[in-house]
Length: 478
Ligand SMILES: [Zn+2]
Image (cartoon, rainbow, N blue to C red; front, side, top):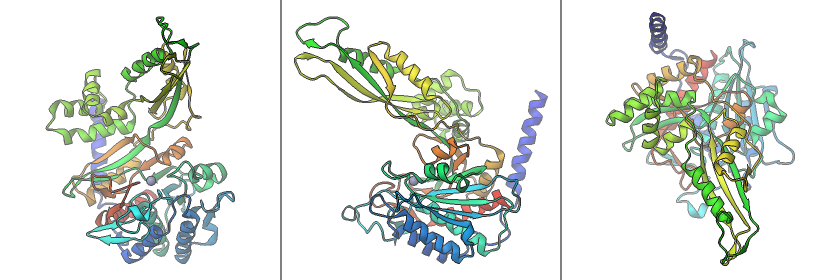
């Protein structure tokens, strides 16, 4: 008991010390300096159509490389990496060598491809950067050219300011994140040029702050880990026959219906990742008006939750349920061949979102058990994604994020979370590079048109995020 008390006390002191620092990079160059140059870079990047198949990531990469060269990066530290079979799907790799080669590098990762955008459907030209009423409009203004531009701009400023990091900084601007049809740049680099990405940890998209309806900051989110997407095929075959003959337990549609009903009713066991634990702990005070829910969230955050606490939180919000456990949902069914015949075959798709670290084989075994009938065969619909574990939320990672966030947005909590969607972090995490989604860019509650029409970003949010990332990269590397 005493030991535990001392442990808590020393943690408090460490946290206090981190917060009490006059904040990282408070001395030295102004983190907001050079805004006109940043605006020009961002404009050029947004206005370079890098959607698949008409645009070109290679052109975007070349344009950013030219700016980095002009800032003084030698040719040897910049590489445009293109698979000759995919000439328009190039990537950019840049390195700012650190003075202490024993420190594992920091990787800044951003994708430069964007979702396609049709001019006729948009209010403004999607590939012209338009500033209106405090917002930038254009495809990629948010996803993910905001971070790509902020990272590139930081690398340029570090060079121009003569910043000599102790830890090596790598920047990778990659293609092919948004569509399965394109070559995924991160996958390609990991396989062919791993030194472009190898790092102690990476900063990536997927995090960011939330604003309320009035534009006030609510929380600053840090993504630590992603659920793994996997489809399973359920297939039942039967001899078929005339539909006037009913026999018990003969009908393939009946078997499938029973199997899918069991899948639908099943709750996978809770599997608490570090990000989910931290998320519920940090979020509990925000739900004070729902005492029971808030108490259950706090218990999860403290690692003391009972089954009842998990049940309360899961029932409150399907997204919360999804961050606590693997989920599997029947999404497609087809079967039968005539209205007057016993079906000969029925297939269904069951879509699972698996907690990182759990094996696909264990999920397959559980689904087979739930199918509960040897006539319903369960198989993987696609080869499994690389297996990855959820990154740890260490003080080394979280200390600077919290200190800089507190300095810029006092009193706004930093809230880690496990993502239920996917980014390129699924490849880097699987490759042993713990990847964190963090940007300091605060977004409107409506999603800002990402992947949809009239994509936008608040100008203030972008400029704040730029300053936040500049300071964070320095704090990690100085
Ligand atoms: Zn993205």
